[in-house]
Image 1 (cartoon, rainbow, N blue to C red):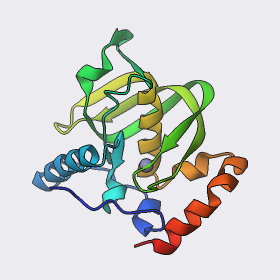
Image 2: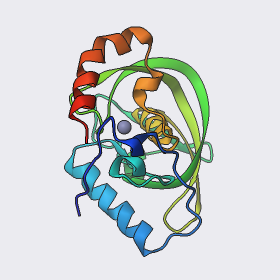
Image 3: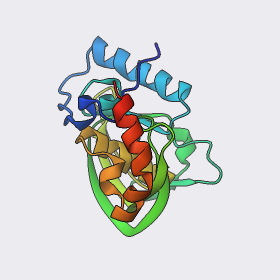
Image 4: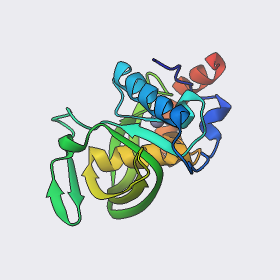
Length: 183
Ligand code: ZN
């Protein structure tokens, strides 16, 4: 089922997600619908907040972007990230590694807006999958960026909070339009 994606100005986007202690049918269905919604919207990631459910859950698919490749390591060994997509991650913890790099980002809750966001180039992720099994990997490239963007959503943090003031100034008009049209 395709869910409605809430836009900038909706209070769910500022809510911190509740930790998921047990995966029941409702969580399973939500994750499945979020995958479908992300794919339908051609998104790289989608957090539960964006469909109005403040939980520690996001889905992500960084495959199929030849211009924005991803690298991934499990247990120190490099793996093919495409084999691990799409991802459904619960209760993630993030360790930021590497140099800060500014790259263009968009967000399904900010249609029509994309701008540079500085973020560390590499991260270590610890999370759980839908079976509540521990998942741990390191990532760089688009995957590292997307994981940080989605992790932020789960804390109620948005990509505009990470932008340089100058960048924010450039998109102010678009933001105002989104906010007045909001929800
Ligand atoms: Zn987003």
